[in-house]
Image (cartoon, rainbow over all chains, first blue to last red; front, side):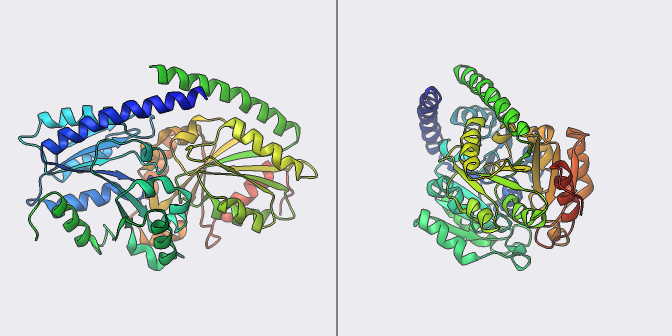
Length: 222
Length: 222
């Protein structure tokens, strides 16, 4: 019972900081997303390819959350986009305060606020769903290799997200995967969610996702 | 700071209950494992195929942890093995008390203690690593689709596990996956870990894993 009370207080405090983040990012004109998925669903690979596609059209900055290592932030910097790493040292999700501190560091290196702020959360399909970071939209990734039953087994994040990106679509011919069942499951939890299906590896389906972000961030249509 | 203190107390209390579980299971002659992985790494599919291979050789009972739904427990019961579901209702890991309660329920339906007790944790590569359930060995699953960089990014569970099962090996021809890099990463974190590579779908590599469990559980060799 004591643990539950502490958790409620932690979440209430988090929400206050998240609201400040939201106001700050909105005032700077940024559209912000919080990328959430299991480890290995392909968040960083999708982000690399997305940033390359948006280069010269939309200014982007990235906050990279990880339990350990700055490897993901290094991958983002390698495609020429400013990235700040948050190494949680064991914690299983980002919270609004960690994100605020990371944005403050990032800000010092930017000449103006980005049009698109991407926050890549720690790889975890459970805990990040409960923590508002101040983002405009939560984007949940689900790789086809994880199986079509995952939305019903991890419903909170699918209920909270505005967008679901189904990744690794190039592997579909090699899997026993019921695409219709997965879509039905997602929509039964969240009928208003927008679903993109793509392969960052082959490029299949990437255009629709990239144009969605560009439009949201106010970039010009291609 | 207050949160950290509460977390320490929670873990200390958990360890006491885990020790009682361990004593009880050992007294009953069971070998127990705690299966940990990301959502969709293939824990339940591996377990189904393992139980079929062990049928008639080793008595098994299963505790199935899930955030929502009893689907996995139903899949285990369908192969004729007693299974108790623990639906955590949002919590991101099993703890020793949940596991103790589940085992008490399970026990009532068994004529004698099982030779092998399998606890399938909630799909999460972060939080379950911190909670001892009383098991003899932690078994971490890593699917090849998750990428060879995951051990260094989620080191705690690879450090805590006695066994790593690399799953979905049938998909290797369709992936850019550096097998040597993955093995090096795992062994750099935990030089003593035992690694099995297999595909539950094709059966490739299953024998070594099944014989390992049978030997640990005191079943006769095939």
